[in-house]
Amino acid sequence: MRRPDIDSLKRSALAYLARYAASRAMLREVLGRRVRRWARATGAAEDGVAAALHAADEAVEAAARAGLVDDARFAAGRTATLVRRGWPERRIRAALGQKGIDGETARTALAEAELDDSAAARRFAARRRLGPWRSAGARAERREKDIAAMMRAGFSLTHARAAIDDTVSEHSSDEMDG
Image 1 (cartoon, rainbow, N blue to C red):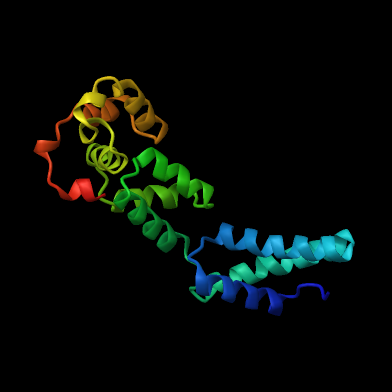
Image 2 (cartoon, rainbow, N blue to C red):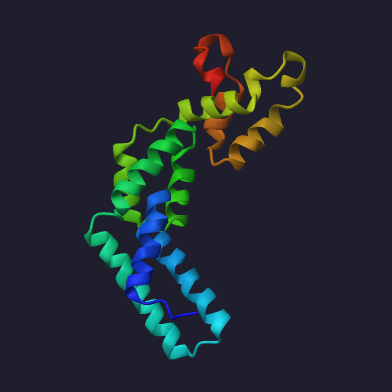
C-alpha cells in the first residue's frame, strides 16, 4: 500500500465531494481517516504520517481554492435544510459546529435563514404527533412528556409549551404533512 500523496488525496477529495456536500473540516477529517487507515495498515513511521497529513491539508486547501469546498455555502444549505425540518436555532447552531463551521459563518447563515422558533416548534410537534396532533384522550396525560421531548430537541420551554398547548384548528393542514 502506497503512502497517500497530494495527487491521490486530491482524487479522494474529488470522489468524496462528488457524492457529498462538505465543509473544510469534514473533508479534512475524511482525508485524515484515509491517512490513518494507511498508517495502521503499513505501520508507517510518525514522520511519514505527518507528511501524509500535511498533504491532506494541502488537498483540502486546493479544493477550497477551486471552489469545491465553501464553508459559507455549506452552512447556508445545511441551515436551510434544518429550518425546513423544523429545528430550532440553538440546535442548528450546534449541528453546524459539529460539522466544523466556525461561529461567524454559522451566525451569518442563521441570519440569512428565515428562522421562526415558534413555527419550527409547531412543525416539530406536528411531525412527531405531539400535543394537539395527538389523540384527544392521550393529550392531557402526555403533556409533560411531550414538552420534555420538545426541549430535548432544542426548543425553549416557552416555545415547547406554546406548541404543545396550541390547537390544531388554527393551523393549516400542511403542518400535519411535515
